[in-house]
Image 1 (tube, rainbow, N blue to C red):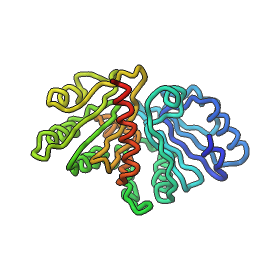
Image 2: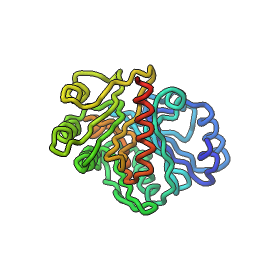
Image 3: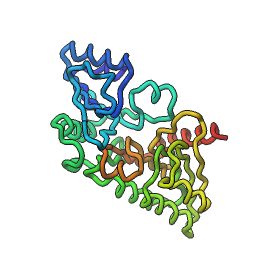
Length: 279
């Protein structure tokens, strides 16, 4: 609400789901005041915004699963949180705001492709790596940028630990890297939390558990909706993408890889908080 209220020119958002009345009302107010307000929403979640005249929908069977905004062409928001009642008051999520003209340009290009109804694979990201306040941020969009390969490359660099909080983790490629890392001579710690409702024969939970990884199922009663890896307590991978085949190959998603120990430690704190709450 604060970021929307502070915007003076343009607000472009791509949400898998949106149902918070205060946000919808404020977007309408901004549009009526002459700002360039545009929304993309996945068609499966169209009801709350169906009366808006500045929204378009992704009607494919695959999801437009992003949760990002660009404010005035100079700041972005992204993460795992949908602007819904459940995600803001019940489920465990993360949300980032980053003031960066370059990241804003990346996200705006992705948004404009959606506005032109070009969903799925399109042009690769223009600026995949940027230096921001003297540290590196990587930015990729799925499926065009093969997000799984970039996540794999970072996981391969681990020398001490890989921690994770994942809603749905079914990628055999990434699960295999974790298995190799924990079984290597380096003695790398692999520890993570899985959302309980996503446990299935396809989940990486059982094979990691059987191999001795310190993994558990979230039993908080609400959804663990994060999509996060933390490497060596120094690099964070976050965004909208679950590490899964659909997340990598079919849905529209975005990820950030943030090479910064201070930011990483905030995610470590969140990981440890959820772990404590799970007993």
